[in-house]
Amino acid sequence: MKSSAKIAFILPALLLTALALSTSKGSAAGETNWPQWRGPEGSGVSAERNLPEEWGEAKNVRWKTPLPGKGHSSPVVWGKRVFVTTAVEGAVVPGAKSATHKIEGQEWKHPDSVGADRKHTFKVIALDRDTGRVLWEQTAWEGTPYDDRHRKGSYAAATPATDGKMVYAYFGAEGLYAYDMSGKQAWKAALGKLGTLGMGAATSPVLYENLVIVQADEEEGKDSAIVALDKKTGKEVWRTPRKVQVSWATPLLVNTGKRTELIASGTESVISYDPATGKELWRSKGLESNAIPSPVATAGHDMVVVSTGFPAKLAYAVRLGASGELKDADIVWRYTKGTAYVPSPILYGDYIYLLTDKGVMTCLDARTGEVKYEGGRVPVPATFTASPVAFDGKILLTSEDGDTFVVKAGPKHEVLRTNSLGEPVYASPAVADGKIFIRGEKSLYAIEQAKK
Image 1 (cartoon, rainbow, N blue to C red):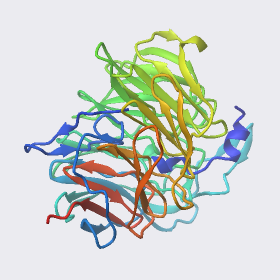
Image 2 (image 1 turned 45 degrees about the vertical axis):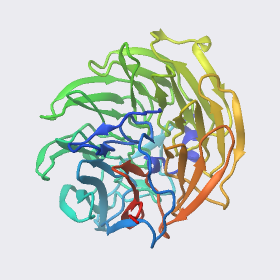
Image 3 (image 1 turned 90 degrees about the vertical axis):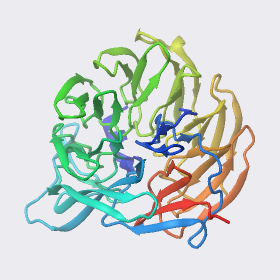
Image 4 (image 1 turned 180 degrees about the vertical axis):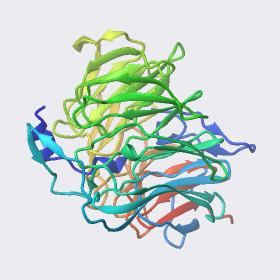
């Protein structure tokens, strides 16, 4: 793919920014956690039942808490705490400007790139899960950012991750920050001058054993890398260079039963790594388009699915456990319609569901790629940035207008209900402890079934 073709049509990639029938347990019996981007297994799937299916501004809203600044990162939940990140924009700073970008040797700036000429404050906020009360608010970084962001996006686009002992917040070129549960900063680490073509960073950190891992790609690919740091100290444990242009997808950890693989999507290559060492396990041909949706997989299906929505529309499945350079014959199935530029797909039960940015749904058999339905639509025109979540036989699709469409899972498309909060939503929901947490443009909501 030519760089000029890629750049001309880049949208707010950072807006993001596997089936798992197990949940990450909290300290109290029955509690469940949502500790990272797309939940316990990075799948967007919760095993919880009896969650609310209907809500509105005055119905089944347990609490609503205003948030400062702007953020498209999802909330994460551990025990009695909910964590979010946000970016508060300040005044123009005379002389401040973005990193320089070049296309085919010529200096270039995306017409929708903004922000690096202003002072910003990046924050990490902890709230009480049951009341929405702010427990602490810490400033991770202040200054003028290294690179611009898309005007529709946010510098707080990467979802934090937590293991119940620490919470890790990533802000691209402005660094990775670790806080304990009381809000005390344990360490901070700089991962490099990571240019994003003026779109902003969005890939989220993932946790593996004693490591916090970040897919730190940059625009030209010369300094791109997968980086692992010690969770306690922030010291770099391993760094594996990768010649891949900037991506916004979050890597996915999958335990196959024989080994754990770390799958990283990319324009030039899709690569599987050993998360303990950073050693490359296998690689396949890249998406040749913007790597924004995150991979999805389950060990039960023994496959990982990667996708892209622009310039090409493509989703394909690769069998886990491979080694070396994969050939076309190693691709289990390929589908070339119905994929999104920003929202990630979701694999739930026997099916994988693709969602376009305009809310058109496709259902495929996860093992074979056989089409079960195409062209499933929500009842009103809508645009989607949030990725789907699923629970109890239902899939939630939340639009930028703040409408959540409850879709019945299975090979027949059926919209069961539409719920609205009356506030724009760009972040993907979280599900934990009988609640659905939805981050709106200005507020964080906890949705819970009202007790009768």
